[in-house]
Length: 360
Image (cartoon, rainbow, N blue to C red):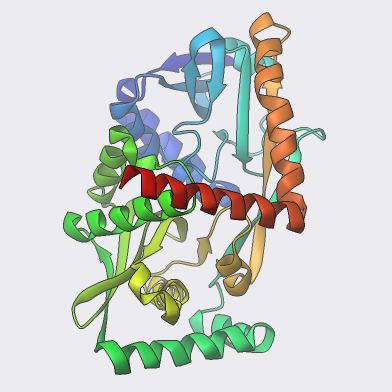
């Protein structure tokens, strides 16, 4: 096994085509965060992005995109934003994880959404569900399942949709738009949501805004940014920006105008989006790891992703463990306990309200 390192922009068409072919050959890699286009675009904005190219003799057998930070700390590309991470490789690839990160110049590689079947994966790593909307049998079969298992949610969402249109006007659905103006409306809603709920505003970082805008402008058969919005009386009500492969759409940035909150616009939008996505050939909407009420109501299946790290016996890895692992374990304990989770969420929302008042 020979491993070479490259900046994303240094990859030639042969390497990019091989990456895409490996991705499309295995359903485990059918996620746009694992597509070469995502790493290439992030690499235009982040000088810490690297790609390890794995060779077996004359053949390329894998690609490992990552970020290399100070002290040899490795992270996934656009860490904190991505819901699928890891190598894209040939079936049954055998490589020692420590050998890989050593070749990458890393002391440790930390991940939180590692996909299944990875050489990096071991029994110590924590597994988490990633809920999905499975559309492989079609939208009608999906909604039939919702009526059976989440009948109250499905019926109330349809009723609220009718009520919204009676009270506010006719609804229009704009699927897979490439217009940047509604994207900026959506990101504004998302920023307000982050602030209201006490979360960090991701879009305060200009590179993230630029990343999203560049991905919206990327439109190919195998990869694209997907902006989806619903309007009432031509006024934007709710929307979502995500990414797709040929058959998988990932949930990334959903948001809505809070003045329409009583109509559950997020649920109305997700059902409308699922129908249009199915019509366009999407088979799975991956909503991403994390406990959210709307995910529980809409899901009809789940994938698994893993959280953990691979570390070499280096001082930097020990420092990283002390700074990150206890915090991660505490967060996992809170997320697993409904009472603690509710208390933490309430505290964050209180902080968000106070911060909003002070900033206002």
